[in-house]
Each structure stands twice: as C-alpha cells, then as structure tokens.
Length: 188
Image 1 (tube, rainbow, N blue to C red):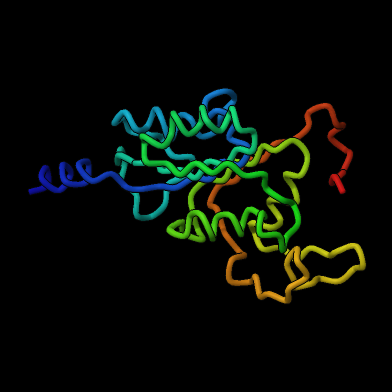
Image 2 (tube, rainbow, N blue to C red; image 1 turned 180 degrees about the horizontal axis):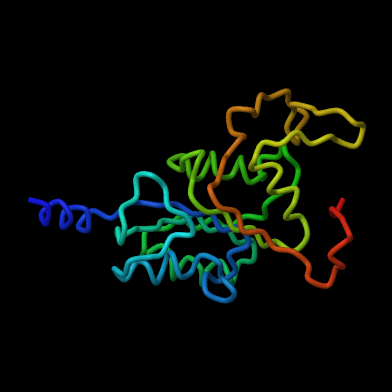
C-alpha cells in the first residue's frame, strides 16, 4: 500500500511555476534553465524551499513564462522552450506601473493561468529591475508629481489593482557588483 502511494506521486509530479524576465536565449546565464530544461528530463529537481505539501524526493515539473525583448534571442528562447510547454513572450517590459507593457499586465494578459503566488521570479533587465519588481509586487509607486495615480499610459482611469500583487515565493534579481556595498541607489 505505501509503495503504491509513492509511485503514484512520482508518476504525477508536483507542478511549479517560474517567471523569467530578460530570459535571453534561455541558456546563457539563465537562472531558470536548470529548472525548466534539466528538470524536464525526469530528474528530481531540488527546490530552493520546501512547503508543507511537498514530500521528500518528490518529482517536480517546472513550467515557465519567459520574457525576452530582443527578437533573435527570443527566437532561440522559443525554439528551446515551447516544445517543453513553456510560455515565451517577446516583449519589452515597461517599468511604468500602469502601462499595458508592465510585467503585471503582461502576465495577466498572456499567462492568465499563473497563480498570484507562483514559485520563482527572476528579473535581469539591466537597469529597471527594482521598478519591475515593485510593479509585480503591487507596491505603491509615486509618480513625478508625488501622487499615486490609477490610470494607464493612455490616461484612462482604469482600476489595475486586480492585476497587481503577485507574491512569488522566491525572487532572484540582478544587481550591479561594481557599486559599493554601503551605497543605496535606485535607478530613477
């Protein structure tokens, strides 16, 4: 009886989701390659955390939403990841919180199946990482005039709170190692 229950859990791997912004080609310096490609070969993937529902040595199937703006890199990304069942999006992610190109808007529109509490977020976009993270977490962002406005890039007064507030369990975000450790700087 106990062996049949363990074999049934291995035949139906636990599904996990990641989002990779600035995914490049899905291989070079990728923070999600080992989860999405290597894990797809049937190996047990070590998780960066364990929740109360996970069993020891449980097989995990990762699916991803991978976003890349550069067209040639996107073609390589798509060629690798679409056969694995991952969602590939060619888009330049805006750091403007109410833009239709913000990360929260892109995920809401192009990956509506993604849980608000997905497992892993990787952001590597060379400069606006902080603002993209603030948007995806639904943090209040003051605009130039000091107000927190609820309108999109066209000036429409649209309630965007329903697409805000994702809560990834683990976040990996790029930083600049040439900056001194005691310097606090957020790119404007």
